[in-house]
Image 1: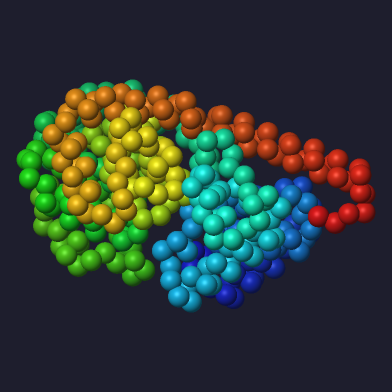
Image 2 (image 1 turned 120 degrees about the vertical axis):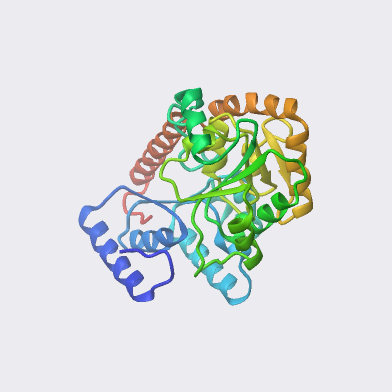
Length: 339
């Protein structure tokens, strides 16, 4: 049973169980996602001599780490990539970072399609699924006025997602008739926000917090703009989801975000950890309604054209078939070779 945190005993048990499973089943491909599953899965697959060991990189916690923690995380990533036969960063920016940090041999790296790990189901994330009456009732249940401009944030309420900067910037907005809708849980034990941030969320009547939601689509449907000031990402699903629902986004100039959002076309890109830039961009949204409508009209089309899930699946399947064909060719050329 894998855990999210470092639990050496449980991780070694998981490694041993996976190794035995792979040795018994003899899969052609093992494909892992996330750092923990990556290191355990790739090491187990390497020992079991699984021919095609693939790992998708969807964000790197080490980007914000320092000192011994950074060194440990660097080692974990390098070991994962050494054991893998192919590594798939889910954004071009992430690929460039891995190369610049010398975490992996460049020849092993490949971005599939236009990026992302799985694309997005645009038939599921579709604003046409929500009628005017449904949206009106949800707004009323959340005490949102008909004329309110609603900024929405979706994600864990933790510092790395930029929640401190977001709450601070929103509290300094001068214009009336705007709300901030927060969708997601706190992680107070692991990643607490600033005390003043938590206090502002509790006391500001214009901040509406609904906690974790299994289905975020209704909340996107009643909102006007996603705000996602994260410090680091791989390829953020929430920005694609918002775009598919017809929302422009304010995002930080980081991996993935700056590939989904095109400045001035479907959103605004700002520097990370910059409260002033965030405040200015939120004010811009409130003061330029025609520009926001134009960017909103572009948002869904750009997602449809670049990140439709079925196209991503086809690209992944094509990659599997290509690797299998190359493997067969190598085995025919060198039947006693070891991968």
